[in-house]
Length: 549
Image 1 (cartoon, rainbow, N blue to C red):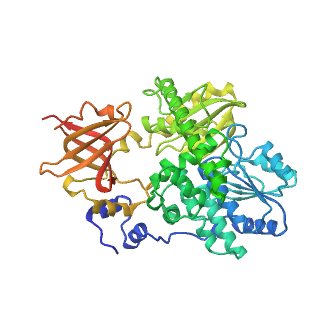
Image 2 (cartoon, rainbow, N blue to C red):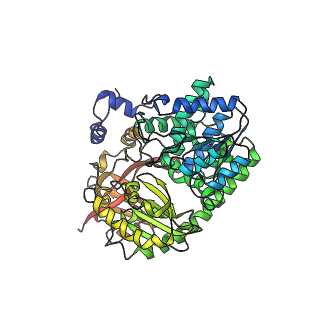
Image 3 (tube, rainbow, N blue to C red):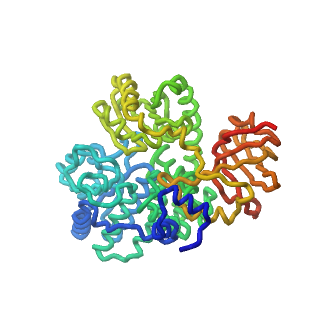
């Protein structure tokens, strides 16, 4: 086993990883933790159905979703099915006109387009009536999904590791993870080239990171191999998009995907048509790709402007709930539904409480929610499911529609339900910034940070280590139009120093960030580069104390 420092061994121990084999698997660049796709309920029958349909010359529709997980899932399934048949098309519903999942109008449309088989990706588990309707029109349906399955299961083949009686060892795959396992099974059973599995690893990493799935177990394996695939990707559309948003492909990390790439993919569906993003990832036409990349970048700029405006409005609306409610429910009359999920996530991060935003829709009110660790949002909202005409999601994020008349009852009931389940849950505001270890400035080095990076990819279930560092403040420099960011030095008594940067919340600490004051900060250790020079840096989460001299 590679020799590790006592600090990194302690960090692994904190994660419950102590045995030699466990440690080797966890830090390995080529992990082995993966499972036979045929362990998944209905995988065998689903693969046979697709092969038989393709070989019979019948038409297949891949039915996706408009977020990054759905987009990557759609592209993966389409890319592999093209190896079996040309009688194929994909359909991604409009967020605004159709909403999430299968809908009756879309079922009519795909039937008119000649579909004999609908293969859903990242949706379908709760579409009981829509699937019954599709079958009445003469179509077969195969569901591949990862969302929570309700009490009533659709009358078709459902491949979803969360469903009852599924013996697959890992249930926390993203939608694209389920699609990847299906594609592996399909490649094996149809006798296709093994390289086809590697050709879609880039997308499974992107979709898994985008959907904020736990970075543990098989997800960790898929993302590790997937990040390698992104770094050497020959997918023209992906390479062009990364170049267009100034992300260096060969050095891309999970946070580059989460905070730079994914917002651009999501911007397509948030502002208008998610098909643009899917087309870019499938296309080999340089001109088409260039036009699509420019459009995605433009839409993302539009998304940011709308998002910032909606965020400010929602903060004002929710101000009277902060101190009295455990779940923040915000009704914003003119919120753009394409960005309510992002805004809910930002407010959740700010107040460390679950957040639900509702806005008017053609069929009543459309709601979207984001939750904190310890509060299963799907279970929380299930207590109000009788009010919903549509409902789906998982423990971290949910969406629903309901009639206007139910809003007041829903507002009260959500708080009653969370009071019943939240007593035993850890308060996210109390746990988020707790340090994993204290470290002296003189011990911070690029070599140590590279060793800590062996614990990546980081994410839910495998958070990036947080360190407590104390020193004297020097060289304070505020950045941003509203001085919302700040960088400074922390200097130890023996003259060792480390650069620090705090993004987005600098004014909160302006009173204690004074030259020569001694402060303690919590944050993540990074290697930063500037004009060709690399140096250690702390990305500050919180300034936890200050001492006046």
